[in-house]
Length: 188
Length: 137
Ligand SMILES: Nc1nc2c(ncn2[C@@H]2O[C@H](COP(=O)(O)OP(=O)(O)OP(=O)(O)O)[C@@H](O)[C@H]2O)c(=O)[nH]1
Ligand SMILES: [Mg+2]
Image (cartoon, rainbow over all chains, first blue to last red):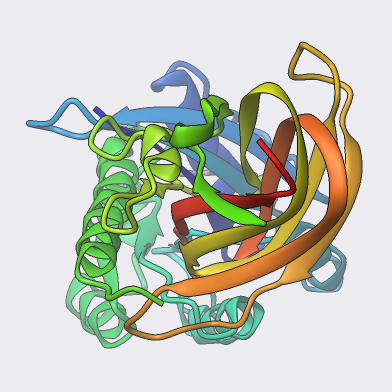
């Protein structure tokens, strides 16, 4: 049995639904805020995820970081060391998807070469008539960035567990990989 | 001066911030670099070594992997609390083999040593062996 610990960075444009999602992760879907209340700094949330078919678990420390352009720089100073990435966009906003590459660049620069497993989340599937980003396009971009793609609706509590489970599982795999590497090392 | 594995000195690990059943902190004291204790995510990570009696330690050697920065604290009390800092060191990154670093402690007497890994070169770091050089035992 192993209990792993990972810090997961939650980023993406303002109002795409990061805080709403992080509340879903945390409260298992009891709390959805209809009124937009902008995150101005970083909020921390903890979620423990059991890895299926093992006795292992991952404690995710989710860092919900403000999306508003003018706040990002100040927030980045509070990110610290990051283990996982959850990049979110709004399916009804082409712009929020286009900006994902800027977010990716910023996060990569922040992590200076450390491999960062992560997911891309297209949120607000409930706004289906206003959809501006096709799943196949998002999926393709995600793959090119080494991210796993998921679509959610924080409002309808749809599929919100999937990205969290994917993140925890990715970290668990990373741990096992490292363990194997270490097992095969020679003495100094 | 003699170099001893911790277990042979009757030293034990009393606290460790991470644990994987398959890689318990006892692997640090067994004198064997093939067995290891591994951190399970995020830094800092620490472990505390308790000596069976106050021991004059001139240096410690740490065999590890992916440790970037290590701080060492000690105390001379019976409980694992109220530590004073002794020294810190930045380790070189290695690829494919272990890091091995000797750290001078100036012969200070201690009943507990606290080793804090404040940062790593990757998500996880491991410690394979800690041995001490003591004046007399
Ligand atoms: N229809 C719909 N609205 C959503 C969904 N998720 C969030 N919202 C709404 O979108 C707005 C913004 O949500 P937040 O979670 O505050 O957005 P954020 O990404 O945290 O924004 P910043 O904190 O400014 O970075 C709020 O009014 C939410 O109610 C969803 O799945 N569907
Ligand atoms: Mg927010």
